Amino acid sequence: MSNGTHYEVLARKYRPQTFSELIGQEHVSRTLQNAIDSGRVAHAFLFTGARGVGKTSTARILAKTLNCEKGLTHEPCNVCPLCIEITKGTSTDVFEIDGASNTGVDDIRELRDNIKYLPSHSRYKIFIIDEVHMLSNNAFNALLKTLEEPPEHVKFIFATTEPHKLPITILSRCQRFDFKRVSLTRIVARLRQIADAEGISVSDTALTLVARKGDGSMRDAQTAFDQVLACCGSSVADEDVVTLIGAVDRRLLADMAQALFRGDTQGVLAGVKTVDGVGYNMRQFCQELIEYFRHLLVICSVKQPEEILDLSAAELDEFRRQAEGFSALDIQRRLTLLIRAESEMAHASFPRLILEIALLKAATLEPVIPIQELLEKVRSLGATAVHAPQLPWETERGGGASVAEQRRQEPRPTEPPPRPSSAPPPPPSSPSSPASPASPASPAPAHTAASPAGALSGWEGFVAFVTEKNPPLGSVLEHGSPLKREPGLMEIGFPAGSYYLASIQDAASIAELRALSKAFSGQDATIRISAINMETGDAPLSLIEKKKSEHERRQEELKQEVEQHPVINEALRIFGGTITDIREA
Image (cartoon, rainbow, N blue to C red):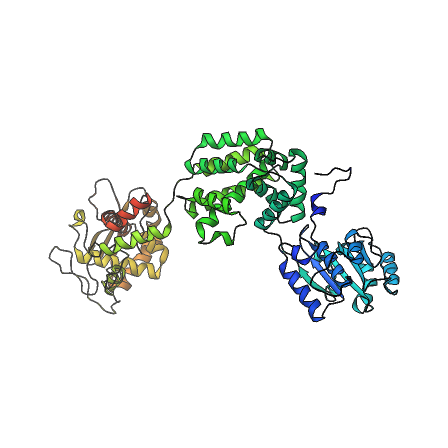
């Protein structure tokens, strides 16, 4: 391509020389051209953006436009001596200063002294300072006054990749233009123009790989293309491009994705082995795979992915074919595992092992049912189970009272009756004795049928009365059984050898019980404490035993109701669950 000894790299050979040749920065070109047309050219400009997107090229084009012999026009002529000098960098009135090399205040003072003199043969003296953020604070301070009120024949153009490092005093004195990253399709189109101009045979796939290597930078992409041409000559093969630029082969990513979705663990590990054999960096491969799954996720999630993804038309069609049959949820779950693995690989000693574990997890993920679908199934079951038996905590449809509210409306047998001031002694215990109206009877278990209902209710009322007056003594009485209750006598049985029997047999406790019995019934009574054998089952149940028996019976009823409820059974079937605990509201 070059017969001489000097070779000009593509990035310099095909550098934009007019505003129309700037690719991806039309918003900047249009604004600057309008400013020239209207005569509103500022004295200081600040061009910001990523590397290789055209900041310095735009500064040179603007300098040529302002100093062109043909006057201030939309585009420089590029044929007059002034334009040619600026293009070659030999102009005596356009100074390109490297901010990284001229960081000191002395350099800025020398520049400030130079500003005083008129341009030698141009319209303006133009100072282009690249990487201006590298100047020191003292240098910025020395530049402030001159930058705010420069002579009419001076223009400043600053370029930087890190505008946040500039003092606010500098930013406020410049017109700022933010340069965008160049899209992949625009870079591919430009590389195709260069390839055609150079007579290079190369496929669009290879150009796309080169353009992606540029990562939004036109200059980086052209530099990578230069490297490919140096190796391959006038005929470029796709395999050579993959090897030279160190990019991960798209076919390897596609095969890995297919293996993950098929659950092919053998194929997944074989793919990792291939990656290691080729020499790819494991973390870089994981990053490429994350980007690949991101493309699939976007395609499955939006209707117009071409507006979001920076892909060529051929790549977009290929991703659409690969995304068929996959849901966004499936892709997102695997993408989450890869992102976590990539962060762990940054400081890991075994990056390959971390990647293999993450890929195996992604390949063996169980399919999930969306929660919305499950809720819809449960709602449909609820609609078909209107006449199904209700659970204890459910309220009746149509505003009926809940079971809990119904229980609250029932009489409570354990509430103590009102204390009579001078009540007659209770009648002797007999099977025909009616229940006391002040203390409703509660049904006694079958094995305590010998105890009259009235006596038992009276016992419960007496225990409640004692608990109110003397809680420790009342808690002991709850474990006792009422063996006999006659006028002038009350016999209470406790399990033989129990703590409760020993704690209530002392004279003080019996005296306290006698006093409380008189306060409750209005008559003196002898208190007799007896030991009973619990194994025979002859004695009536204590209050504690009755509560325990009633709780177990209620729990068994609840269990049967829950197990027979159709909605619960269907929910267990859908979720694959089991009943571990039942609690009554």
